[in-house]
Image: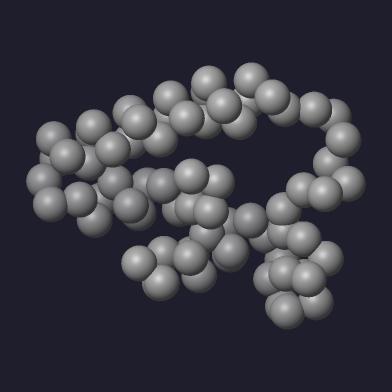
Length: 72
């Protein structure tokens, strides 16, 4: 999901084996292509990181993704 964008390579590497990692990555990539990119706009006013994330100290979506990985 979008919560791990920027850290997907770490999720893939954490898989129990290479086959599972490859299957997971294929699913994630399909989601990005078919859902996220298909509905992408040029309006970035509500994009990540949000104002609240920035106020909390995050500077990039990758930082947010790494924090989300710590939760799982």
